[in-house]
Length: 422
Image 1: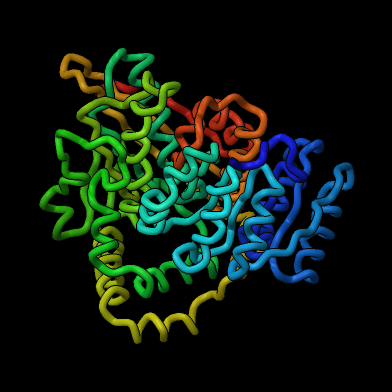
Image 2: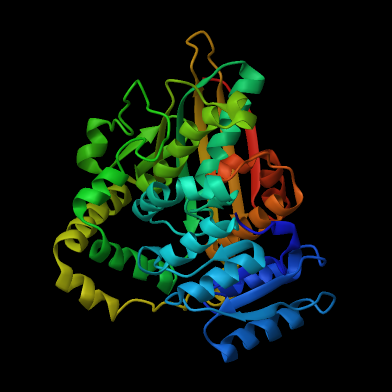
């Protein structure tokens, strides 16, 4: 049996704190989280970790700076020791398909609450298969993909379905999410993940993990098509939505879908969440907004071409590695200040007599990676300080409920939900 969490040395440990996202996570904790939280930064390099600590001191002189812990992803015993020391572990070491499992395993076995910011839903599928029962036995609340992939879409969908249920007294039949605005550049870690995932998983594994409702513990009896595209979209790469404008294929569509659909399947199985179930006929879609049909054509077919090349031409992947931003690097502070992201969504009630819809807008002024740091850090505080009414297991961001959304909103990621006419 895992040691009792409340007697542990730390409340939070940021593992991989010297990486790009790890540094931003440490900065958010230092500047925004309660000062009575006991925390540490962990990694391999003493000099780099000390630099993170020194930066945290400058950010907030009123709080005790983080302690330093040493652990390497190749040292299972060190990871086990680290997991036992903390109530919550935030993992920012990727690509997770190469470096993430040992940390995930250590937390599942130690009963340590765990959050990460992967976008590798095929890897998440493997972790669910291997460690779901372990986490249930230990009491560890484990939530992968709680960064920009895939918390914004998951939380916005939960809010839309909640609005339909509370304001229109109906289940939700369909949710369409649009990445309405995306101003930002990828970090080296994100690019390394995109280029490396085909080296770890076969095309068969990737297809299986991204099939509709593949990660859902509840079978979808309606067996819906995830995105029944208009003919115009299939050839021209975009279509026009009456409420969301011209939409093209989303770069994060299948990744976010895996988590949203898992939420759909988890809600009826969690005693404290059964009333939040979206409905038996629920279908989810995601797109990206574009200004013209030409831009939609370019984005759609570029994504198709890139997917084929990366999947079937390993030499091209190896060649690209030398030309893209390297892991640990990303947009600097000046560039991050100019970034922003906005999601919009429409939810349709599962009742033909109801003509209204729910409309959502979720916006963050700032870097995608700062938002990722906020999403993960605020999740840690939520499980530490709020009664989330979850037993051990592998969950999704929306399973943390309204208190988590309130914390994220207060930190700068603002949600607005309203009813609109058909």
